Length: 257
Image (tube, rainbow, N blue to C red; front, side, top):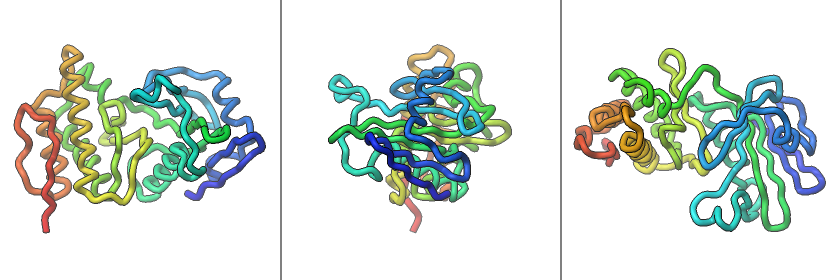
């Protein structure tokens, strides 16, 4: 997938997939934000489910987290177009899809620059008939083979040297059959050593442990997290026993020589 960049008067720049949509105009993202959509809570804010480019899509506006959000919720400092988080995530998703990894298709990324600051959005094709790992575990437990396929799916990204900077139970999607997808690669990184990429598993297990402590009946206890870690290690061929039952399943990998 090779994206094209359009830059318009007024500071608007759009990176888009010419194989999936027609050339966007300067008001493309403005129209999406103002149009009819279903608002859904996700990440640091709401995402919008809408129809665009002839398909069901997800529109996400980038928002700040931590203490910075008290200064500005969605303004970022300019360091060049290709260094904006929206453009970087679009190109990362496109690269992963080209390698056959289970991620959604990026359609367009929009950046609106105002001097030294900018705002940004990303439009992604919606994956049909899926639910988040968090939602699934809130209503029913997973079988051992389900944990194994999730661990094996995560191992594919580690083997391909991709790091998910915020992997949590809301960013893992379970589909029909054995399908497992990862979403929300904001601040994701490519070409990292597998040992570093493996830190994403620790983040996921920390998320599972936190949700289990806050949601009665959430089906992700120590045994389930150990199953996940063991499947992840096995898929990578890394030695080591599953973590202690009370741990968060951080893999602490030792790569074979």
